[in-house]
Amino acid sequence: MNLIDYKNVELRQAEQIVLHDVNVTISNGEWIYLLGKVGTGKSTFMKSLYGALPIYSGDAKVLNYDMHKIRRRQLPYLRRRIGIVFQDFQLLTDRSVEENLLFVLRATGWSNKRMMKDHVMDVLRQVGLDTKAYKMPYQLSGGEQQRVVIARALLNTPELILADEPTGNLDPETGTEIMDLLYSISQAGIAVVISTHNLAWTEQYKGRKLLFGNGLIRESV
Image 1 (tube, helix red, strand yellow):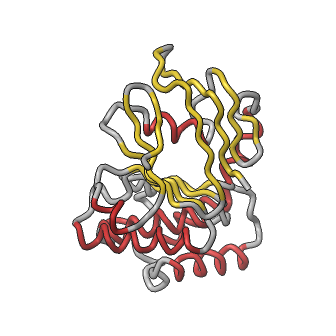
Image 2: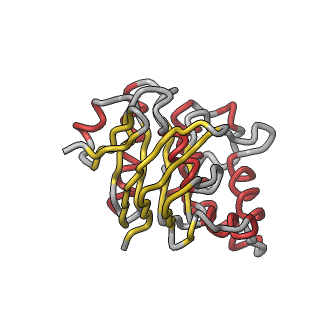
């Protein structure tokens, strides 16, 4: 089943055409690289997938939502099915790891406190941080903070994870640990779309490569 299906899509930022003639399909469990120089539209493409940037023209479906016609009130339901991993973590610095994750659950409609706590611990166990739930973000290493971000992305059992330069602020060894974790998630059937400038990853973790340049996206053979 196609999670993402873009046909002849055009994307703009401030009325400037960033990408045109975009034809991309992504299915369950795929591992997809977005490759290209800064300013070639990788972030623009990602933002369009969760409705942070409107579709200017063309046919665009994400998780069966028509992104050309999607209404503002529908966006939270779409975004619950997408996990987003940011390069700069974007954790709430004034609360613990557990409270960071509980905050997301409350915001997405969870209410049973026992179920919420159990679920948070299950997800932290998945990323190897179940003993760090009480810690504050500043007490964690960069790699551990990124694991919290991945745990946050997994909270609502997403069908798709978008990872924007997830290893950009990490040393090579820690970056490899994060890539291993994301790759294991894709092997479990969740599609992972990862933007990176580190071409070495494309050899180590095999997947499809979408190349961005000159306003176009083309697939590497």
